[in-house]
Amino acid sequence: FQSNFVFRVDGPLQVNGTAANPVLFTPANTSWGWQGIWLNELGAGASGTYLSYAIIEGSLNGGLRLTNSTPGLTNCTIRSNSTSGNGGGILAYTDINVGDVVLNNCVVTNNTAAGYGGGVFALFGYGDLVLSGSAIVNNRSRAYGGGICATMSRGTLRSRDQTNSVSGNIA
Image 1 (cartoon, rainbow, N blue to C red):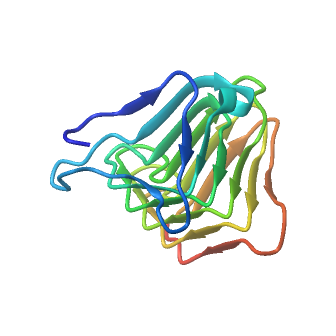
Image 2: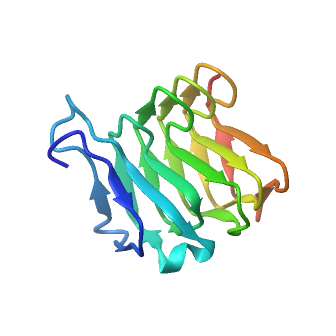
């Protein structure tokens, strides 16, 4: 990104990288950053939206923001993002039933938040935050949840398997 823009998505987004050639979302100039990816009101299954083998880095407003959107996230790395609010790596918010946010084989690392959830902040009225083969490591927040901070009225934080790692996070 050439300037301090947000990549706002109001319709389907399909990112198809590979292990050898992941799709990189990063600022062209790290001195000014960019505002991350915002998936806005895409609904259940996020209207066919998915990110596979993507790297999101260098955002100054959180790496990935999900508002009532549950995209497929597989083999993604969300790293070195920051925010003056909540969710340095991922900020996920739902107030309608759009399903679960699932991180499949993803790494969320070295993100910072001045508020809650250096790695992930989830504020869910409905749905679960599900980790499957993922790592939430070395993130930092100035408040609660260096790695993950989750507030859920009708959902849970779940692990699909024993291969997840949450470590080295500081709040």
